[in-house]
Amino acid sequence: MIVGHFPESRLRRLRRTKFARDLVQETALSVKDLIYPVFVLEGKNISAPVASMPGIFRGSSDKLLHTCEELVALGIPAIALFPVISDEKKGLYAHEAYNPDGLIPRVVSELKNRFPDLGVITDVALDPYTSHGQDGIVDENGYILNDETTEILKKQALCHAEAGADIVAPSDMMDGRIGAIREILDKHSHHLVLILSYAAKYASHFYGPFRDAVGSAKSLGKGGKETYQMDPANVAEALREVAMDIEEGADIVMVKPGIFYADILSRVKQQFSLPTFAYQVSGEYAMLKSAFKAGFLSEDACILESLLCLKRAGANAILTYFAMDAARLLNQKK
Ligand code: PBG
Image (cartoon, rainbow, N blue to C red; front, side, top):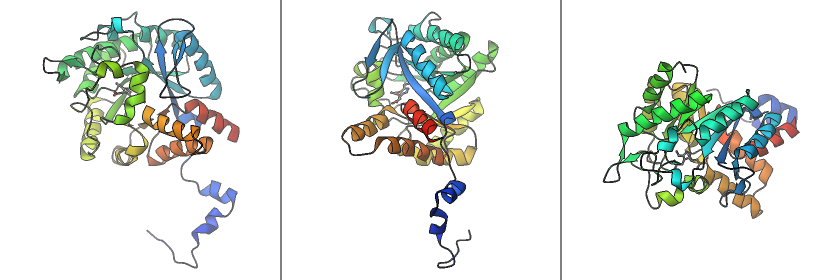
């Protein structure tokens, strides 16, 4: 690398004027990079706030249609759907997860009818549907059974694809599920449905507010997910997870959580150069929101900076609860 020497080289020359700063800028954040995660529940005219995520609501599908009108107007390309399932529909075997008349398939087809160009991403995972809040079927010792869980994930992914989902996104971390899902989708002529794999998903404590939102926190109790989600200490293992998911047919891979795992994101992007998404998770949102509320950080600037940093680290797109705020800010800037 040629670095130059002071005083011939003065790096501040490039920073003096706005136009020069704009010209040499290496990364840009755009509305087209944003994906809005939404929590949907049964019923009509319901909009229930999530206490640990100020500004975020669990809404019935009529409310969601409203939100989608706004998303489309703002230019946000896609949403990610997460269901809130009532306790009586939860069970040990997560039957509701692949009910073709269930909440998610109904919402997906409604959305695709009304907003054909808005990308719809569905979460393929069992935790909203299990009585114990784990992402899989448990044996008598509480261990999450891999292959038995994958069988159900296949049915769930197929059910979402049949309803019209554009992207199915397995977020469970079972081994081999990407290949299994690709195979069943292809067998049923859904070879154009994309798979976004939560390839390197860590057993993070920053998911707490999300678990409150979908109501899996109370089912989960003190149970952790470290027998399937990754140890926050590991890097090489993340690269292996990603490599295997690519071999199994993932179209897009994701690293989750976001900013604390930006090193992983960067490594994945550099090593594999395939579309890579980041998830700025509920705990990151809650942290920032609390600081904004206390007046400790300036809201607009910090929202955009937090997302730009994920782009710089290698994200092609970002799932973020700030998607609407960020889009408004970016649109104003134009
Ligand atoms: C579960 C799932 C989780 C999130 C997305 N899908 C939580 C978990 O693994 O316990 C977290 C998202 C967030 O914190 O914003 N399959």
